[in-house]
Every structure is written in structure tokens, then in C-alpha cells.
Length: 378
Ligand code: NDP
Image (cartoon, rainbow, N blue to C red; front, side, top):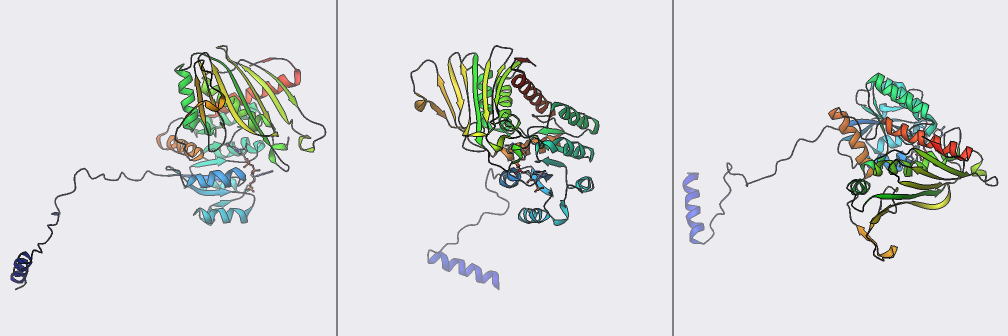
């Protein structure tokens, strides 16, 4: 009988000192075993315009996103779109052209449209996207001018679909830390803020075209404007500005090369900023307070940001400033997941259309101030 045999075998093992290792009875689990939560539902995104930002940053960022996945592409170049679709597991029948853009409405997998087109196309594609029943994330600058921004906000209200502007630094932990430090007056009252955002732009580039609503203010200066408004928590009331458009550089036939501008805030904070398409790369700001300063350099890059502070009147050189270590995130994944979360929970995004409109009104005032050589109230 097999049972008798196994008992004999057990006695033999005992004599030989080979006792069987007791197994955990199936009704006893290891204590405090962490059980997985169900995977969150991912929101389906359509990416419109497969240029540098889309291909180098946004598509790869989906791989790090928790709540967002690409399910459709819109492009003027079908061959490129097919390759991108294959690389990201997007079905070939979810590739659209600008002419078939409206057919996104018939694709139930698409909940959000991400507009990454030249600035002059933002308003049109955002409004049509909202009217096709989808939520829209639109790249900065929101549009070519404030009137287009107002029409985009109206379309969002009329359709009940959400509109968010892609201000990635609102989802970036170091920038949020600075906003918190200033709100708590950790270094006393803020007095001035200086910010530079410059890079050398080579032709051909959408940034150098007036027809495509290029120019350094909407492309680079907007970071200084938006970040200042965000970390200071107030809106500027007056601007001054000067600009330069060299006559001997063909890159600047249609747009200015550089702007320097100031923003006056109601609390008395004065911000002075510059942006240029003709200078070596510089992406930084420093906030001067009564009892120290805080700076980010680089501040506006996609990665490798650094936050440094000086507290009190110590005689440190810049090289000796204390650097705060704050874990980096993928800014694009964080931004997209924020919008997906808003869609899933029916909440308003942190950077809605009104934020983009505020920046465009300030940009218009800066352009007017530079043209008229006078201070312009906002
Ligand atoms: P690119 O010129 O690299 O890409 C733009 C894409 O738009 C093109 O590849 C093309 O895609 C499509 N497109 C459609 N019509 C035109 C046209 N008439 N001329 C040129 N392109 C056209 O630009 P970027 O990717 O650098 O910038 C796109 C947007 O993203 C801009 O609004 C810019 O301000 C913003 N941006 C934001 C950044 C951020 O950090 N938030 C950083 C960089 C840019 P296709 O071939 O698929 O049709």
C-alpha cells in the first residue's frame, strides 16, 4: 500500500537523519504580504504633429506615464507616422492626416488630443479637437494671440471638454519647491527676479517664421513670464521692453532676435528678463529675497535641473551655494498624467486655458512696449 510505504520511508529517513522539511500549510500565508492594487485605467491619447518635441520627448515619455498611452497619431507624413506607430504599438488604422483629423471623433479609444504643431496652428486644431468631442492638451505658447486664446477657451466651455496648456514646469518638483519656499517667505519678502532664456536657433525652423507665429517671446520668454507668475503667485500689472532685430542676419528677417523686458508685480516685486534666439544656451532664474536668494540653473531644461540657495548674508561665492537635491521626474510624463487624472476624475487641470491667455496678454503688452518704447499697463 502506498501509504504504508511512505511511512516506512519516513522512518528510514529519520534513522538516517534526513527528516523532511515541513512545508507551509496552504491555509497559512506569510504575514503582511503586500497585494497588488488593480492597474489604473490608462487614458488614450492622440498626438498631433510628429516634430522634434513629439518624437524626442513626448512619445518616449509615454513609456514612463502611469495613466496615459498613445493610441493615435496625426501627421502630414504617413511614412514617418507608420514607423512611429509601429515603435509604440499603435494600430496602423489609427494614423490620421491633417485632412482626416476630424475622423478622430469616430475613434472611441482617443480621449485626449495633444496638439504639438507650429504655434499658428494651435487654435484651429484645438478648437476642432474640442468640437470633435475630445479633451485637448495644447503646447505653449497657447496660440498666435490673445483673441485666439479666448476662442479656444470659449470652445472648451461650449463643448464641456477640458483644455490644458502644456506648461510642464508646473508638474516639476524643484519649481514647485521654490513656489512653496516663496509662499512661506522662507527667505523673507521677494524683491526682484532675474531670468534668462536663450538659445541659438538655426534655420530652417518654425521659430523663425512670422507666418507660423514664431519669435523668441512665445518660444523662450514665455518660460520666464509663466514661471514668475507661478512662483510669485501674482499677476504683473505693468511691463517695459526693448527688442533687437538685426538687419544683417537672414535668420531674423521675420522675427526679432532678442527681447529684454521687465514685469512690475502689485506686491512691489520687479522681474527683469531676457530671451534670445541668437545666443549660446542659457536657461536660468534667480529670485532675490530680503534674507537670501534661490536660483535654478538650468531652470527650463527637460532634465538636469539644479536648485541652489543662499540664506542670509554669508559671503559665499556662487560656487559655494548650497544645492538642494530633489528627485527629478520626467516632466512630460508628469504633465500628461496630470491631465489624464483630470479626465478620469473630472477635475480642472492646474494649467487651464486661462493660464495660457494670461501669458499671451503679457506677451502682447511686451511687444507693444518694445514698439512704442513706453511702459504698458496690463
Ligand atoms: P517642429 O518643427 O520640430 O515640429 C512641428 C511639427 O508640426 C512638424 O514636424 C510637422 O509634423 C507639423 N507641421 C504641420 N504643419 C507644419 C508646417 N506648416 N510647418 C512645420 N511643421 C508643421 O517643432 P517642435 O516640435 O520643436 O515644436 C512644436 C510645438 O511644441 C511648438 O508650439 C513649440 O512651441 C512647442 N514646444 C514646446 C516645448 C516644451 O518644452 N513644452 C519644447 C519644444 C517645443 P508632421 O511632419 O508630423 O506633419
